[in-house]
Length: 212
Image (cartoon, rainbow, N blue to C red; front, side):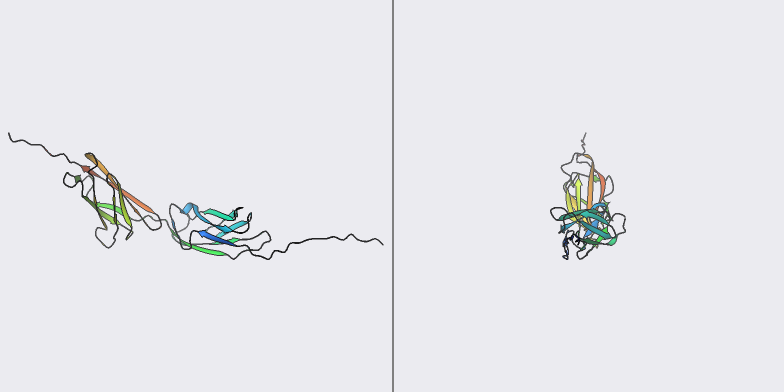
């Protein structure tokens, strides 16, 4: 009698789910305008060579590295300000998927309001007030800093309940007479920065006169 050749097949049973995590950013983080187009989400993943998949308000895919980490830049810039959500998943070669991680961030692409309202453009700084010249204005982010650079350096706190919202006393004594430019900056908690500037006229030369 002819006997059939026995065929042997070996299969691998894989019933374990992969593991992965998000290490940065934290859930609830703010996304600023400057970061929105390439906002990086990173973490750990157990299946080197397998994809970490992002879906939701934006989508993308990145391969889990040989060091069992991932880092993916996602583009949130086309979305409206407010909450944005993504779901992250990671599956092994056998098709076992880990538990989905859901993250919600707050997209804030708006720069705060900022203006120098006093003194007027080209106002004079004289020899009497050059070391203590007062500048004031409006700002939109309560308790956040308004900083100054250019012809004078310093900072003060924005207090939206006051009028004016900020007041700073600055020292222009290191500048030569003529037009001097003061720059102001104000950054919100998301990292959006507003800037403005104003020219003043520094004149510290005393007039001359004689009795003839």
